[in-house]
Amino acid sequence: MLTESDSSVMIQDMNLSEIERRIEAIQHRLIHLGPMHPGSLGEQYNVCGKAACRCKDPKKPQKHGPYYQLSYTWRGKSTTRFVRPERVDGMQRKVANYKRFRELVNEWVDLEVEREKAERAQEKHAGGN
Ligand SMILES: [Zn+2]
Image 1 (cartoon, rainbow, N blue to C red):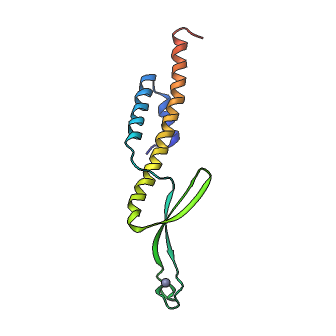
Image 2: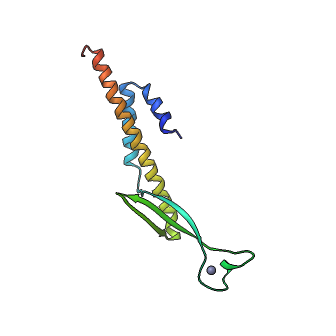
C-alpha cells in the first residue's frame, strides 16, 4: 500500500485528464465501499471475582476472554464498548472499510489540489496570465 507522501509524489506527474480519471475511479470505489464504522477493535482478557477461579491460578493463570472492545472518537466524543463475539467479524470489516474510506477521501483531496494546479497551468499556456 502507498503511503500518503508516495501517492502525492505520483500525483504530481499527472496531467489534467489523468487526474480526472483517477478522481472518477475513487468516486466509484467510494460508492461501493459498503457499511463502515470509525474506530479500532481491541482484545481484552479479564480476571473475575470468584475466589478459586482458573483466572487466579498462582502457577498458570488463565484469564477470561478474549473480550472485544471497539474504541472510537466521533464529533469530539470518545466511546469504548464491548462487541459481542458473533459481531466481531462484521465489525472488523466495517472498521477496515472506514479506514479505506478515509484513505480514499484523502487521496481525492490530494487530486483536487493537483487538479487546481493543472488547471491554472493550462490557462497560463492558453495565453492567460
Ligand atoms: Zn475467573
